[in-house]
Image (cartoon, rainbow, N blue to C red; front, side, top):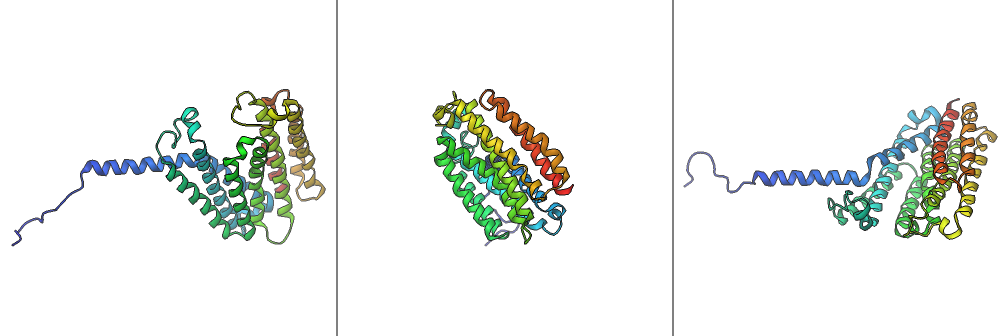
Length: 305
């Protein structure tokens, strides 16, 4: 016979266990956020957004906003996956150089990081499906290159430089593909911007390797193979080609006078960086970064003026 009154609870979860579980979940979420590096993800999304504005102007927040937003989200997801992959591959060296990172500190397991990276790449691919087949091809190619870079190309210097330069440029190419309909102008604009970004990034990456020659004991970089002066000449050539490429929007009349006004100082900075790539790589690398920002502003101005 059951006694009257409040029913007896056969078991209860200790309060401390609930607190521990909550803390564990919060720690895992915090670790995943740090693994993704949200600021880098936002920067990638913004890069795609800028590419979309360069491609189609005000239509980027009008009729073509939906595919552009999907492309920006895909770029952010891809960047999160790439950052996670980087931490997985570098986890042993990070225990010495960056002991506070999620894997190096033990905040996350390697299995969790792999699952996160795979999920992020899958999300990027899924979003690309809703844009176009060509967008999906770009995401798939970028995933292959990202894995190849982390697995082998990063340690080989020059091939890794080329992959990084392509991945930066592909943000703008991805934007152009996402807003492309029938007229070729958006693809021409974003294609030229992507090529310029590729060349400028390639020159900057080689210049950074010249600066880091003594510290790159675990990499076989281009400056180590052929010397700082020859590597500097190749970096200068890449920057010079970027300057030459910057005239194409004027030749094809796909950007307005605003572009012509702002691209001149950007070209001057690229030329200055090219002339100092071997003699003063730190200054050259810094000036190249600023020149890329001014060049982006030039493309944006040309889309409206």
